[in-house]
Image (spheres, one colour):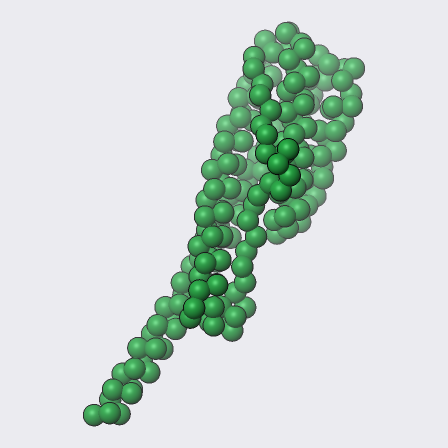
Length: 185
């Protein structure tokens, strides 16, 4: 009888360990899915920027420094390694600030603000920014779930043995970069 009880306990522990491992795999996949969502939206934003710059160029040729800064920061953000969460976060924050300055420049040009192409690009960029925020929230929630599991006992024993590590949050470190520039047309 004692042998069956011991055997039953071993089977239960084995089933539980398999469950923990599969839970870690599921949470890691959610983190990867979340990062992929952010990556797609950042690519969409990066693709919109050249059209926006070309539209503004025609109206604000003497605002060359702002246009060059946006172009440079776009290239820097696009060249960041896909899996460098902290680096991408910093580069994308700098790009967001530069875009805010670009829209501030556009304020000085009533004809530009009235241009249908510019308005459409601005609306598209706003929509992408909202989608990026949603993707960031999803990703950070998935990271939180994974990190809690990786740190919790007894899952931390399984996580360490199979190489599961905590993931980085996608966050803005500089409080000044958290401020969203206001743009009104």
